[in-house]
Length: 339
Ligand code: DAH
Image (tube, rainbow, N blue to C red):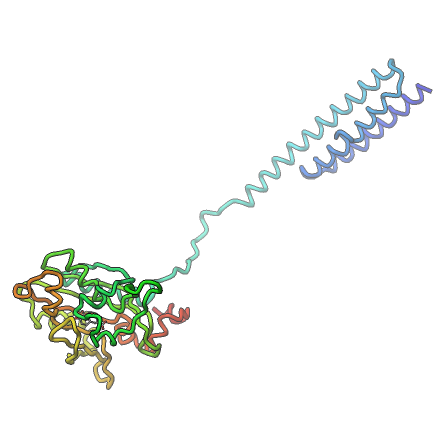
């Protein structure tokens, strides 16, 4: 009986060996190898089951059968290991091949973004003023009533304040979004002694109804030059120089009288393409009012100055033939890519 069991067990081992060797030959990757290992060599695999069956054999037979099964196990393990190593190498090679970069391939051009037309025009104007000897400075977009109005010769009840419909900051009576870049004139003069020769680019905000030439957010560049002996001739010369530099010879400018509380005299400048019937107002300007100079402790007997504030959008519209200011803010990719 016992011998029968031993024979049966050895027979099973023989069959297992044949089948396992056959399957080993058919393996083709590490994943299948792992499945094979579990099926034959795992804790609950077929060999483990045979070894388990040893328990019923008498001790003298158990040793010999155990040795035979262990030899089989070692043989299958070694053989499997050999195949695993082989597949692992092939798979690694395939992975490296798939990941390989061909550094000799020609480059493909990437589409880069570009600066918004308003940014481009601002930079172009800054460059012109820097070449004329001005320094670029900036100031805050949220301003106090004092800098935006009061110090610019507009006390609280001044009727000219109506020109600048303002956005006030909720909960802060005294704070507003600046309606122009002129408050930076005051900030700069408070910090420096003359001569002062600066340009100030920046965003401005007004509670205007939106139309083709008005937007609640827009950009200005402020210019201020204070020194001994500055006259209206400097103002006109500087303005005509930068207009010609920016627009070229196909445009012309005219000066028209105006009123601003912070300049005396005050004027505005219109520009048009030569031959066009339509003038566009692009800036307000004037000789700095003595009251403004006094406000920052500059002696108006000793120093004079001129200033202007230009609308960047309007300059861009005129030069590039954009007929609606809203186009700048709609972010239509066809418009943006045109410039
Ligand atoms: N701040 C004025 C505005 O936004 C424009 C202006 C006029 C600026 C005269 C100046 C100036 O510096 O002198 O309407």
